[in-house]
Length: 296
Image 1 (cartoon, helix red, strand yellow):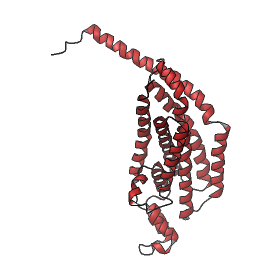
Image 2 (cartoon, one colour; image 1 turned 45 degrees about the vertical axis):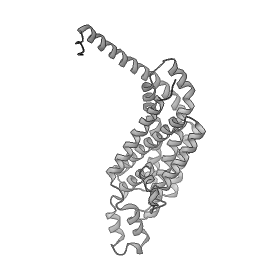
Image 3 (cartoon, rainbow, N blue to C red; image 1 turned 135 degrees about the horizontal axis):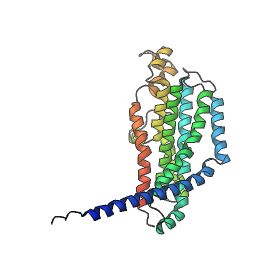
Image 4 (tube, rainbow, N blue to C red; image 1 turned 180 degrees about the horizontal axis):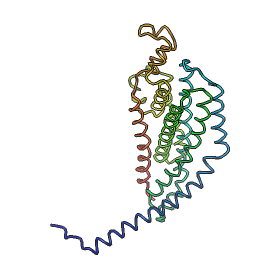
């Protein structure tokens, strides 16, 4: 049976309803965003967290003070330290967000104060400036203190990689927190997960057992570490030529061995960028889907 055509008045009413719903949504989003920024400002920039980041940056800057370009092992240790620190910190902080807000969230949702989408987007957008300022300060201090590639373009690429990684790690924490909704259990799970990511990140173990190889490709740490290496050393040809590493004599020199195992090949930078972006969006989408299934 054919549906009768919509009358002009019905079309006008539909447009008004859609416009009203959009206006209401943005109003809810604006109010929730302001509330989120006020709450997160004190949480993100409390004295202990600022001290933690500044102390870590000064310690790293001092330990790797003006490191030398061809000291491959030392440089890779620095890059992996950056990957570990900014993988664990944002994911561990984010895992408590939804469990801690569960009671208030359910109460406000049950009363119809706002839609889930407006609440979730306000939380995501409100987190961005709070989550990105401290890693920017950290890498600015560490990069120039440690004497990494003295090129401003390379510094900006390193900063972009790090910020993308921080957001992906935060997304992981949000997803695990939404899935478990218990602060203690969620913190335990995120600790174990990040430990697995660190072990398979490509610095400690190169010959990962076949049954564990898949874990490397779901590790945010692995992709961040590969991109940081690529920014500093590219495909490895420049440093290989500088050290005089021949195809037949690589294993005779420890630095040449590091070039072969840690720098050359493994994975294309475009794949790493795509994987980080997919995780950045995917983990947040997973958290949203899980929250939708929680009954108010």
